[in-house]
Image (tube, rainbow, N blue to C red; front, side, top):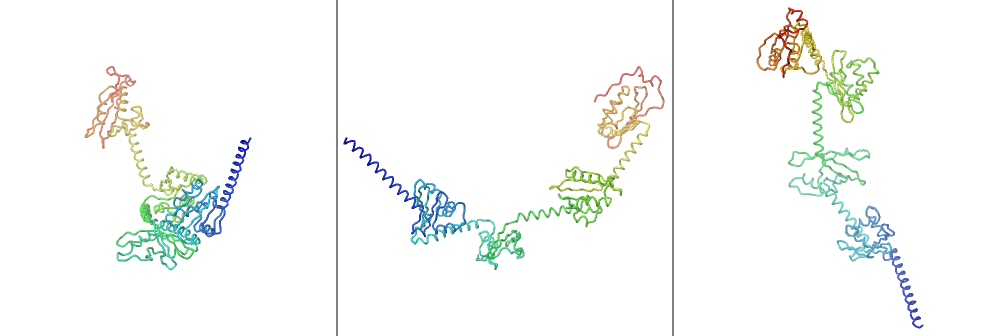
Length: 535
């Protein structure tokens, strides 16, 4: 019984001790959490932040001024990290372990400041302190100064690594700031005996007219400089920004490649202009809005349109109407259908398929060609082909006259080229051999012709001689022979060489007639069936 009471007493005692420990721990934990969320009177001038995750719960006035010393970036936590990271490079890395360890202390790279961080129940307390002797009232100024100094160094480094000259000029024309690129450029322009000085010399002579924009942004200026001892000019495009205090901030971008490209383009355009000016073909280019954008002098000569009209950039429809009034195009029978035709002209020219011959009332003949250009532009080419048409007509007339003369001859005539291809024949030839070569679209060779001749004549060796003669090169003599035909008639074959290796073969039938039996087409007993000559 006694042992039981003792055991019960021990259990109760242990329970009370544990309960007391839990209560004490809770009070301590509550007191610690309360302490982390509040500031003491001695901390009012210190730099202290209270965060819950990345949300700023509270901060001392000095801490808030520290955050406001630079442009806010992201959340309050990321902004604080950006401010302290230059002096505490491992800030973000160490803060990830704060919840695990509960307390952390970081020392700045220059050992002049430290960060004390505490964490409890999701609340982080960040305190920035100076390690150098001094009162807490100076912590704000030192931390802010450090952050601003770091930002100033960063900006100065960025400016010095910019390859373009940057400078700031006061209202009186004095340079108050510049980057390393400007200093290097100024040093390259000064003489060898001159010593560097501050403020540096003015490199770019800028015009004040570019700044008088009526409150608008000044337009960029293109300025050229020539270093001593060099004949090459270097071009820059200078952009100016007006500052609030009346100063001007300038930035110069090198544009040597752009200037060379523009110069090459101008030379190319000049060359094209001279080429277009000397072309005998009239050129009219209409842009995507169908207005005349470019023309050459030949267009005025061919269309007889005044220069004032062409310079006014008329529309395509007005241009065509003017051509119609000047009778530089065929007169349409129906104006409405002609309008539709002109619309089709533009559509066809865009596809590069328009080409038409205009027979003008004046007797001239123009070839009009449409060609597409980039960006929806259309080019019309006007070419006077009156002489070409005249020569073609005269040549065609000569051919027709020569053919008519051949057709009027009683003998059958066939002319072969040096390659053995039948070039021309007459009507008597078609009647004699029962075939008109002019109706065939394929080339008729001497072999094809000899095979047909063999079908109409008795076997003989004349055709082999004719075939070899036509294919022969070098000097040749004319000759003739008689060939018996299958109907009993005797045909005289005359072979005569012509210029450039051509050969004329003519066939003449005698005036005397054979016997009626032979006229009926019977072959004498001494004749055999005709054979063909192998190629």
